[in-house]
Image (cartoon, rainbow, N blue to C red; front, side, top):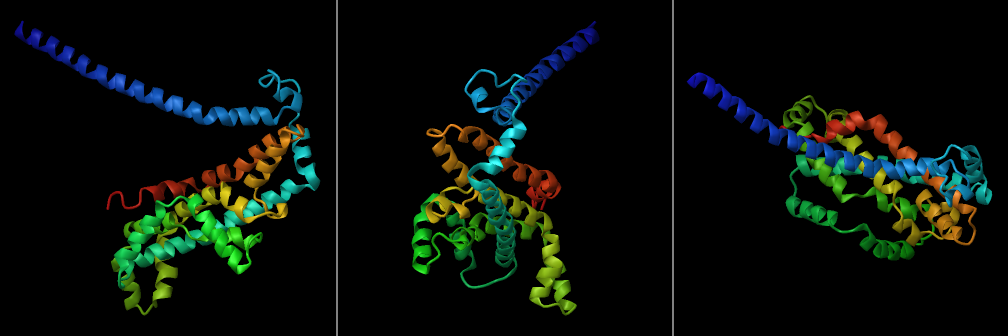
Length: 296
């Protein structure tokens, strides 16, 4: 009888211990579900709205299958203002893809130098890099404009392209990736074999830093593609606008000319596609890069 009572007590305790676990798991699943809905519902609205005409946007027929105007909106988008959207899209690809690639290479190289080399005031300089991470980009817009104005670069491609090449947060990540991926022993072995410092970096270290390079590239790509304030300060020529600034100007005109509303929504839908594509294609390297040094 004592054994039976003990067994019953154990079962009761086990059931009681499982209840908090199940409750905690349910709360976590609920929070995750709400977060997913919060993220996906605006995207769903954007997809549905891009397929509707101007009249349907201002009515309650957004969820209906009638009045399907996706192809017409797409055609109007690339025909609006003499095909200006194509120019903006090309500008954004140039700013973001080339700028993110060069910026990632610069950030990884700087982080590698901070990690592997000894030089005077290294930690103090790295402290300045960390301090620069906390400075909002909007604060730097006016000084950058004054510098560009002094060099005659205002309203040119270079006034937007050059500032995005340098990212303090990318330098910080570059040092972390270098610590996690590049053993000092491998570099010493390359130097013993007669490789110079540049050859050692390009042929040995950079290959090991591939996941980190992709991670920094994706962060840079997202930041540059969504960059709005700096182009707005620097540029006045619409032919140099990125997509974000171009859609803003069209949206500002929509209150006077309602025909801009469907093309702005369609343009916004196309504007998120490169980021989705980049994360889908490079997620394997990105996910491995995020765990750099976690088990070091």
